Amino acid sequence: MMALLYETVPAFEDTWIECLGDLGRYRMAIEDDDIRDLEVWTGVARHWYSKASDKAPTTGRLYHHLAILARPNALQQLYYYAKSLCAVVPFTSARESILTLFDPVLNAENGHGQYRLPPLDTAFIRAHEHLFTGRTMERFEPAVKEFLGLFDSQIGRITKKFMEQGCHIAISNNVAMLGFASKENPLMKAIASSSEDKAADVDMDESRDESSPSMMPRSPSIGFLGIPRWKETN
Picture (cartoon, rainbow, N blue to C red):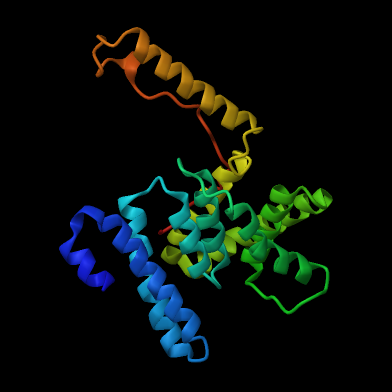
């Protein structure tokens, strides 16, 4: 029925696409005892949610759906949770959902549970868990050092395949610099202030040529840790 509506009622195309993703997730719940069917329906749900997010990139809820489907890829999960929180229309419930990613890593660190990730992923998720929750911050620097120690060898091992992981790492780091979109974060305050100032400038002088340099979008320059790797073939 949803597929028929998608084809015949294009006015609500965005709604039908997300509903098709929802149906795929419902089938995942039904087929949870058959790994092969589960993988098929996970792919179906991911396809429709990805299509929906391409059409509505400012909607955080859709990135939250994709984060759930990204399991067990922890780097991709964190990337989507981060985008969900930092989207123009954020999905605030992701602040609770992201703990389902952090808590198992923390429990494994404390010797509880059986959660296992590759060493690089574990160190990266652990560092972000400390930043997000503010708990046991004395463990933050060791987690960062462990991550940086594994970073170069990871690139050398998987070469060009690291491009996707690198994207997930960079976006997650940038969102962390924004305090995971916390309103109390200094950079978030600066961005909000810049947006308000720009709106005021437009209101005061609507006749100004929109192509002039003074009317170009303004935003704070935000840097992040760059790790050089010489003679890289990627």
